[in-house]
Image (cartoon, rainbow, N blue to C red; front, side, top):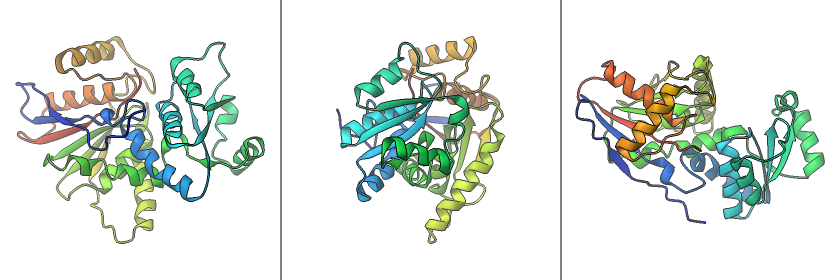
Length: 295
């Protein structure tokens, strides 16, 4: 497998009618399988697992989880065994995501949706330890403080663009939290919720930020430098419409940048809608983080 490229290219979109400068940070080019923000979320978790002398990573995800896919690939590349706790019953035939995970050596363990909701409880985790032995646990989506730490490095890689706004898709809040902690005082981050009813993500981002600052007392991040737009979820997680599908296809044809229907398609659709609505001050530099995603 190929090595990780932590500094992928930034390109400017050629859309003459825009009254802002729009740049795309192609984070999906960090690695063919451990792409986008997934590498940044996993980076310090894998380092910590190695430091604690763990040889096995256990994590959680749905049947089409980018996180499961990327974690399986990362564990294979960096010499860890991996276990994926998958939401739902095992299908008669595995989809491409789970097939790839198994090909990387990941042990897939399917649990009911009811049991999956208990994944954060001590009782459930203890049961997993009895079944699988000792492991290093990475939460669903890689969303913990070490994941946030990795995400603080995302915006730093784009320092060549003196941007005013940074935009990214938002599913758990960890990526947005990490990004917001590393911005300059005059910069703002906007997360586009891919979840229906995603207003709760504001509190999640605040919790991640607060916990991170407690562990890094010398850090004095800017306050109120992030927001979450909840208008472009297209029905909720992993849901889409013909309008979104058409947009994704046309965007790739025009800019040669692939988007997915779960995360980046929704973010770019929403971002361009805001530009058309004059949300951003004329002449602003807007940086869109392409966080990757399976198609």
